[in-house]
Length: 614
Image (cartoon, rainbow, N blue to C red):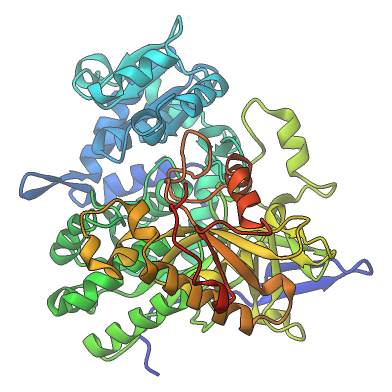
């Protein structure tokens, strides 16, 4: 099958084993030189290509642009303003804003001046009802200055106000921060130490409350060189990205904006979101701007595939000759989505594009392991990138992943106990992820992702349930009606699930209920029947109790951000859901299950319908 060409790196590994079964892997090719700080690349491109856009965003019907030369001028001006206000690593800046030009200038200005900053998820201010997570972040960070884009943040700001904390918004920024730079700001930039903290990124909270991950200047610069050596085509021509991924997460804020800045490329801000009814803006942007490389999370690819299937002209524009590669991360991509994407590409341009993925985290800046080749296995994450050493520690029938490299955090901000627990006796960071070898007799073929170790549990029989692998199988089998699943069964006789439904797909099963509540839709025989049929076939394909799901409940009440059930990027905190919805779990396993429990045994699906459940 023909694939579009893109220059990709050589990750052939050096592999060592010891007598305890521990495996160490690293790329045979050593990491090349990288700058002291990402802002050194801003200085370089401002001189080499001052008019080239670094950032583009919509203003009305056109794209406004910030060129590299203008970007450096504004960054130096704002950096001077930050220094004049006495900001420093101990008096940091917090940015409460989505992706916009002010956010980017502030972030780069803080890095240029050696001022610590933290981009904070807008959802903590605009979606949360009690501002609990925002309060936690503010207590950890203790910012001296907070940038909040506009008046929508007023209530959130009031909840974290404290003496000595100043606030500015987009209207105030020119008057209060932008000033004539002096030699002081350039001396501050020249004095930056590579291992000094550049920013704090708060984890998504999928395994608990958000932690403040220290991102040093070295981490950010080294990881971009790792990415370039893994995907060297990025350096062949200035990359063009059309991207919505938020800058308070490592995928958007480190990986993607870093790729544009490091390689002299342009990032077009996408105000769309991979949600029903919110992807139209992404379609509009992709129609007008053809990216050279496309990054998204699996949910984004689901929306993209649906849009491409409906619109041949969009597919022709998207798969234009300058698009070289597709990349997904943050979760597993369903196989049917990958297959449909490949089918549309073949029909549109006569060739497939390599679909790349890997494994990383906020603590690894983020890229640590990557698969820059095509694979039929969605769980295939590849091999260590140059400069990263992977230590695989046996954990039952799988391996725990630990990593070391210039891209790895020194720890968590103001949390020495968490930092100490995060590293092993050899200084490797414990990622908390599990893997297997794609080919046990040939480790050079790479690694397969096998879930989060903290999510796995034992049935009452003592059988281990691998939650990550099971969830991936569930999502593939129950598509399109189930978007995600919380796996149950700890100390129980069997596995069950609390299923997060795709409400649009479920509604299509009962079009007569177009205006009904989803509680009514979830109780409709067509919806229950579709889930029951898939439960039945899934259970009968299982090879043992750990891979068989006997019963399910469709969740009607959305997962809660305030209760840490879900992160603002959509990742589920399994432990939080199970704790908050313990009553549902009890109902799931009752000897006489309630009507809202869907079971795999077809003979028991004739029970009278009752309420749907929250």
